[in-house]
Length: 155
Image (cartoon, rainbow, N blue to C red; front, top):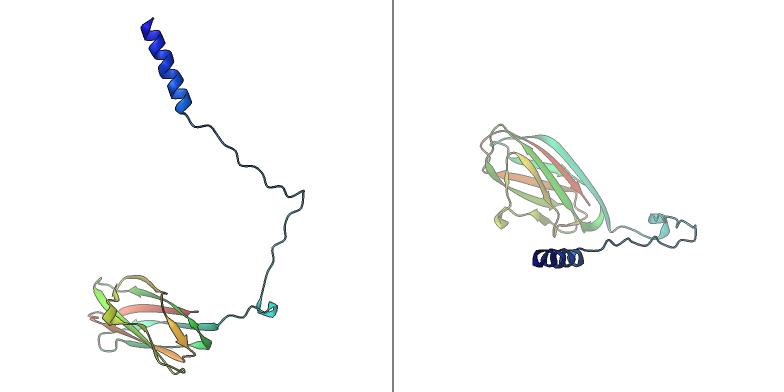
């Protein structure tokens, strides 16, 4: 009898400890589906800048620099994606300096430990501002092999 009572109490305590299922309420739209509003520059929303630049080619230990021309208008935030491919994986450093605008700007500073590899994809998006610059000079340091590089600049 004691075993049956203990089993019943154990079963009752387990049942009360189990969570109850909760169902979310459906939104009350009264049969009306809200429309999606699309805005554009014509609606008065104007971006601070429009910038793009692209390069795809090979850098070598003898020529470790790449100049990427920019199609830019205005000033604002910038993002940079660098894709590297090489037969040997080794650490290298990259510096990117923008020229030809109202102010030269260092986009990527090798002194701030911007260590990348000869094989990989790297994103630089924080704290980069361009000032109507015309081009960005990328310099790859500590490069010992030829490396294929693709650079995208956007903002």
